[in-house]
Length: 293
Image 1 (cartoon, rainbow, N blue to C red):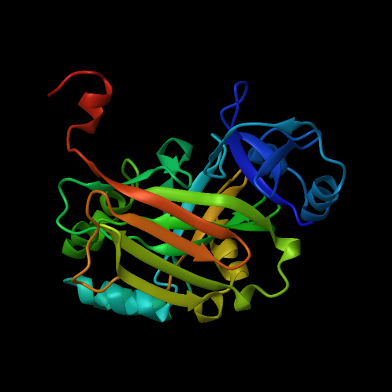
Image 2 (cartoon, one colour):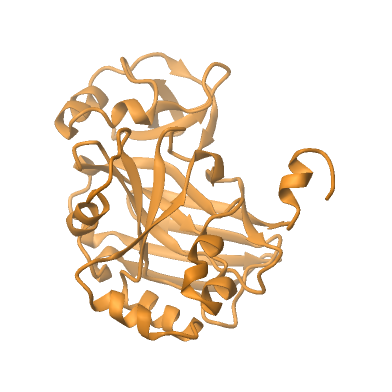
């Protein structure tokens, strides 16, 4: 029976790394969090994960991250992504240039506090006319720059904001509910051929599928090694890093997320990441403090 890695919230730990098998969870001897697992070389981690498990535990499945770990994103890594960005933007030439360049587009996407897991709400900004899901495969990279596993990422994007000006990228990408990861991490040693992995996504509204599309990692324009190499240049990731590798399926311009929609992303060998869409009000910070501006 194959083992996956998962992060759950227990009574004692908000981000407990566990071994997952058929929906049940076991602790990992000597490793409490994903950040701790990132300190081990790939082969060391494999021995621990494939060895005897610890205690069986119960908890709520969360996005596979830890409080110390950053989530980064890569852009324009598929031909479809390049075409979609050019269609959306008033300055389309920048996307053609980055698609053809040696240096990839890399950006800070999220942290644990802005990341949700499967079954939780993702967000669309109240000040944006059109937002879309961006279904992606994310790689889990340890401190030795080794890919230790894969998970699914929904890089939710405020399409209208980014389309006005690429310099608004951070506002289009980083806000409450803009990032979902999960459901689990598939260890890289369990994957025979990365390029054969298929990716599919759908948006369901009022019980009807209004959009669906498919691609595969074989269409990825850059290698994992290339993306990791650039990400670690002049950077320090003392707890490892999660890098979402870009999207190869983007909804057409007439499709935009609405409150109550359900976005489902399925990736071969990993599972399905499913989230309901919620509208994020402009005064979210004030509301979180219990008062209105």
